[in-house]
Image 1 (cartoon, one colour):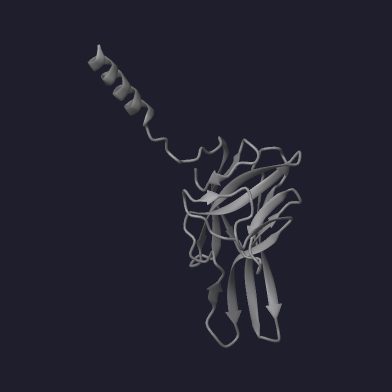
Image 2 (tube, helix red, strand yellow):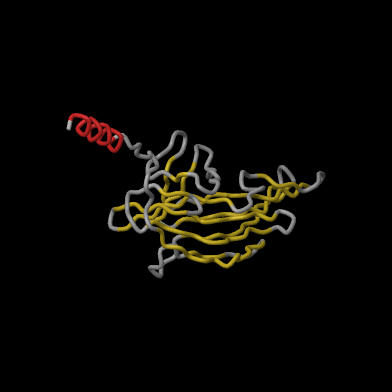
Length: 191
């Protein structure tokens, strides 16, 4: 009997000693296939990321001439609606997320969620005396993720847009997008 109690006690300790993983759960996502739409210079694409029949994001291009510096800039923008937020830094650039990276619901260090933003993702600089070149932190992006946050009924929903930039062809490629179905939750890019 004493032997049986010791075995029961040890079995109970072993069963209670299971390690619980620290992996956070992530919310269910609503996905939108963007069909690898290409946005060349002079083109645009409107995105309704949550399916409510209103435009959340506008991807577009602008030509900016600078006669003083004798150069033109072909800029590739993302514009957010009033209830759409983009994660931006102090110089109005947006970070690039890799697949699986967490897009936080709050403001990470050095970044803030701003609504109605207009951010240059990449630009082609065409100078009078020098060869053309590309600038911007998205210039080498291949299947990377733009963090997006929507506000509905004073609740925040995180999501992303999967983007590639093909500088040799002078275009952005929009692959797909997703938005959380639960408010106030961080999400993983590409998941």
